[in-house]
Image (cartoon, rainbow, N blue to C red; front, top):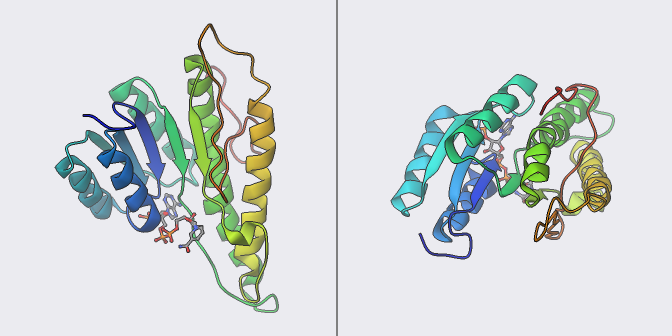
Length: 212
Ligand SMILES: NC(=O)c1ccc[n+]([C@@H]2O[C@H](COP(=O)([O-])OP(=O)(O)OC[C@H]3O[C@@H](n4cnc5c(N)ncnc54)[C@H](OP(=O)(O)O)[C@@H]3O)[C@@H](O)[C@H]2O)c1
């Protein structure tokens, strides 16, 4: 296919609906090959069909990004099928609304953190070694205006989005220290406001496995 992303391999998490679906279709229109991840099997299959109807290749892998094993299977499936990953869009996430004195507040923070922050950390940890081997690649992390500010009743979401922004900023500076993997190679970071990109550290929940 022709297009700005012709033959690039783009992995989108949270691709079953909303912004993730739109991102997947936009990349498909630009000729990319898509790897689609989310939990809802049927909705993911529908998006895969929409991508194919645009003439692009697609692989959907039902995945819960809070599970390290599921994320490992996702990335393994992507590389088995396409051999590389050029762009990772860490889009999967949830948003909880509630006041700080609500009994559910602490739980809301923890659940949002699991899905929206640690999900992103898990996928990044699995994909980064691939980008490093390739000597090129881009990771886009979905943050929010709530990653810079906080509004009443959006506390849990704002706390986690601030963490997402911090993760992105620290990871960006880590990746910029990579030595070039070879002549003409690129370890580039693309920032798209407000989201930014990638990371290299291990998470306490999901220690990096050796050899990955
Ligand atoms: N909407 C906004 O105004 C806005 C603004 C700024 C930033 N954002 C961020 O943009 C992203 C997408 O927002 P949206 O409005 O499109 O949300 P959405 O319509 O609720 O879609 C969220 C997506 O994430 C997936 N997801 C949720 N938990 C998951 C998990 N544990 N594992 C895998 N996939 C999971 C969902 O699919 P399944 O349920 O099938 O798993 C769905 O595809 C979110 O990260 C959000 O924080 C949104």
